[in-house]
Image 1 (cartoon, rainbow, N blue to C red):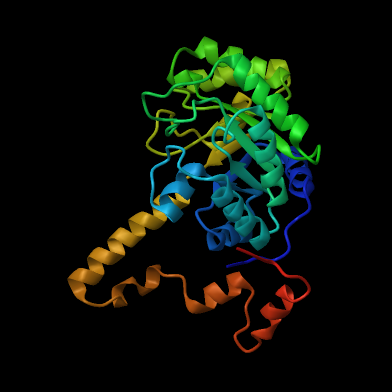
Image 2: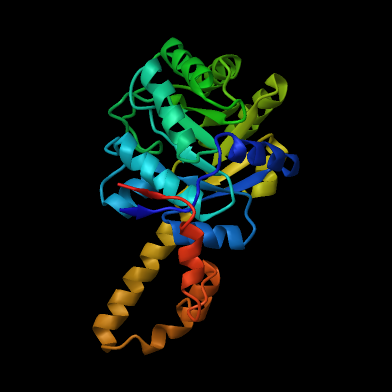
Length: 307
C-alpha cells in the first residue's frame, strides 16, 4: 500500500508551471524518489522531473528500454505530486501505444498529479535518447499522438511536451522540421533530444524563437550534448532545462564510496560529515518526533491509500 497526501487537482500544477515561465529559463531537476523531491523544493527549484531513465534504474533496477508500465508510472507520479507543492513534469516515454492510448495515458497521469506530460517519437522498443540505434516513428504518426494528447487532457492547463529523437537518427534539418510540425500540432513545449553542439542548440533556439515555441533542453551527463550553463541556454532560446538523472548519479556514487569505506574500515564514523543528519531529515519531512499524530491527522480526512 502507498500512503499519499491529497493530490493536486488536474491542471493546478500546469498553471504553476506556466506562471513560472515568466522567470525563464527554468531549471527542472529530476527526482529519483519523494524525499529528493522535498529537497528540490526546499532549495527553491521551480519544478521536479520524473525521468523514465531514473525511475527505471533507481526504483525498478531495469534499463530505460520501455519496461515501465503505465500503472507503475502513475503510482510514482502520485508519490511525487503528493509529497511536494511543486509542479511535476512526467516522462511518459512513447505514450504506451497509439493515439487513443496516449489520450488515456495523459488522463491517467493528470489524475495522478502531473503538471506536464512528455511524449517522444521513438518506436515502442525505445532506448535512452543518447544511445545509438534509436528508431523513430513517422512525423505524421507523432503528430496524431500529440493531437490526441492535447484533446485528451482534462485540463487545458496541463502541459503537453513533444520530444523528438530524430537528431540521433538523421540530421539537424530533420530535427528542425519536426519541431515545426510538433509545435503546429499543438504541443505546448518541444524537446529536441541529443543535440550535439552549442551550435546545434543555437540553431534550434532560433527556430523556437521564430515559431513562438517553448523549448526544453536536456543537460543529462555523459551523453551526446555538451553541458551548457542555464543562462547560456536561456540566451540561446530555451525556456526550460532538464537535469534528469543528476541526483541519482550523485547518490549512487556516494553509495559506492560509502560501501567501499565501510568494507575497508568496518565503521561509518569517517562518513558522518557527509551524511544528512537525523535532525535534517526530520526537518525536511516537517516531522516532530514528539508529536507523531500531526502526520496522522494530515492523512485522516480522506482515504489516500492506493494499492
